[in-house]
Image (cartoon, rainbow, N blue to C red):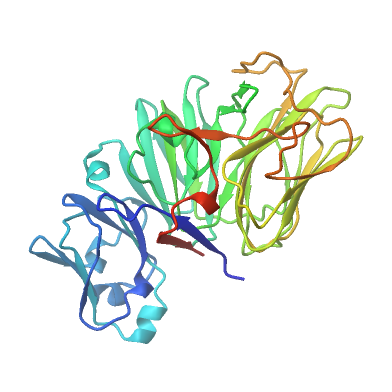
Length: 400
């Protein structure tokens, strides 16, 4: 089944956008709204050059066909555009309907930022390294939505790493704001709420991302490998007892996912999840130790957005049941008998530690099992993040 993630964005003149080429199926030219002067247009496509040559974009008195913007893989320079941007095609409707490419239109601020990069994922393996940069914003665009793998992440413990689904918006370079944004799906270090425990992980497991766009914010140096590979994540074994990793809904595999943790029998441990969902049916996450299992129910409504859940247990496995829709889960596991780099807290264990096997519904107030992340906006207002209470104007669609 085709998965569709609806992303609610502000429909303003300074917003970025992501467009499917197959949506421009019309005679004549069409204006693309909400484009700032001085923005940039980026093309990510594995479509043939003949079809792309019949699609043109015009702005500021200049016209270019998309085949001239085609880059087989790697970093994209972008094409400068203004608010008068239009697009036209001479392809037949059948050809247009079968196009798989996308265009990303940045804001003016992004176009002027030397640390703002856009990368088209089509190579088997590419090492991206930013060893001397104080910060990086990297937008990753998938020409094939089911085939993006991030691995070999090298991150010094003095740095911060944030990963977000979708595309960046205004304020993307304010790390404090972005760390609490509703698009956050992975972070290292991770800070739980309300205990204030902060955990940094030297080991980050490989990630399989299965939508068209996501972006990385790094404060400090970062290096990793990116590829267009798809490796079935349905059964995965971690490489360390203290580690963090990432799971999300997969269209091309069995919908059930399982992670078997490396663990040391008799040790104390913490296991936690950072969860976001956009589901059409309920789903369950089950965490097991040698003694018991705990189940976190992820309901269809309300959606879960960047919430942290923690258990005080020496976990052995994590599994996610089938569901319709999209979910993002960062998991982290800590062996408390090991020396933990970057752990800062009032106590080594979370304040919420269930002692019996039970089922928990995400979103209900259960002090014995869950901790929720809240956001502080630029205005200093504290609010719980929920998709159902966010902006009701649909501006962009991430598609499989």
